[in-house]
Amino acid sequence: MKRMMLVLMMIACAAGILSAQIPADREALLNGDGNGMALYAESNGFPGPKHVLELAEKLALTAKQKAEVREIFEDMRTRARTIGKMIVKIEGELHYAFNSGMLKQESIEEDAESIGRMRGTLRGVHLAAHVKTREILTKKQIELYAALRKEQKEKEAHKPR
Figure (tube, rainbow, N blue to C red):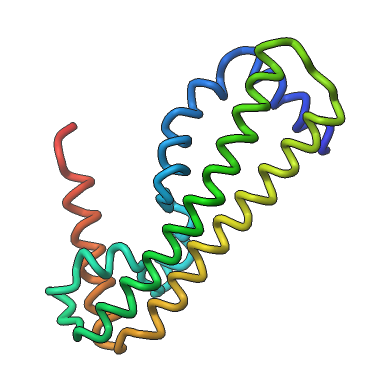
């Protein structure tokens, strides 16, 4: 199964499919953005620190809550950016190996596995931030957050593109 995925990945790289996706992903990784990494948390009542801060006034956060959530957000973003930079570096090396033709199956497999582990760690950083954020909010704030986020998503879905 691993070999099959590796072969498909090599074919996609050779065809330029992955390289077309990398710039948007690259920017998100370097910025420490979640890009859906914590969707499970968000959809199950675990608010994200970034969105909580954006909705701080409507959620009536206390000064203490706001400071604690900001600390969680900054820690998450710092850690995510660090991991993101490492992922981008290895993705770049992998891209270069294909581009230059200097391919070694062993190093390709190692790079792909390393990227997978780091993306898993990155996801864990984002998910943990949601858990920590939920612990700071009251039940009423969590319910209000869910309603406000649902409203935001509905508005976004109806925006003309």
